[in-house]
Structures are given as structure tokens and as C-alpha cells.
Image (cartoon, rainbow, N blue to C red):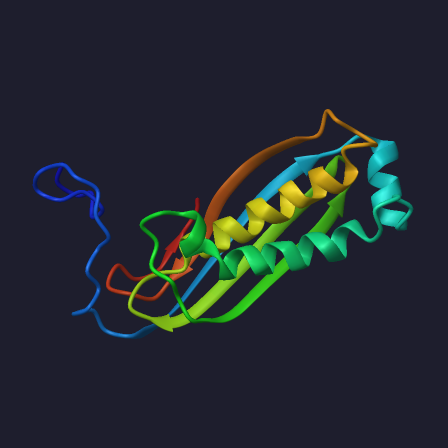
Length: 156
């Protein structure tokens, strides 16, 4: 099981000890997309849904989720986030969520960015499901990360 930091020598899951790691500036960006029927997308864009401003609620939900990542993902360290941004871009076929999380810490913020993007998309689904139950969430992935011992990384 070498190479997996959350697995110990006996194969048991454990939380990684980051005590000896240096505090560095760390940032990660993640994205995902929700495909939405044209009429439902128009209602979201125009603010004409019965549940209110879908995009505003999804943005707040994503930011709140980033702050609660350690409560949702069992082996994640709780992090003092210095910034979380969430962009929701409307396209012809749906909405793309792009989240960026940052911290000054000993471990990365990839999971916080991924959690923010995914919860924003789930919130859009929840708020618009009366208009389109066939919405599809896809493409959730890390776009980039910086900081830490492993350095910078960008998706191809």
C-alpha cells in the first residue's frame, strides 16, 4: 500500500500527521458542471424560480461546504481557510461551478475546493428539481493546486 498517505503499514486508514510540515500558502481550484433543460436554465438565469435566487444560494452553500469539509470527509484536516470563491457561469447547456480555496497551512485545500464545487452543484439541483429532474452533474475535477512540498500542479 505504499504511496497512499492515508493508509498505514498494516493497511488501516489513518489521519496523516502533518506536525513536521512547513506552513505555506496553498491554493486549489476545482470545477464541475450541471446540465439543465433550457426552460429551467432560463428560469434560474431570470430569477424566476419559486425557491428564489438559485445562484446566490448555491454560491453561499458552496462556500459554507468548503468550511465544513473536515466534517464531511473523514480523514481531512480542519483548515483555517483564508479565502473561498465560487463562480457560477451560465452556458447554453447548464451551469459550471468553479471554486477556489486558499489557506496558510500544513496541508492542501484540494478537498475544500472540490467540496465547494460539488455542493454548489447539488444545491442548484435541489433548488431547480421541480423544473428539471433530469439535470446531470458531471466533470467534477481538480483544475489546479499550488503550495506545499509537492509544488504546483495543473490539469491538462
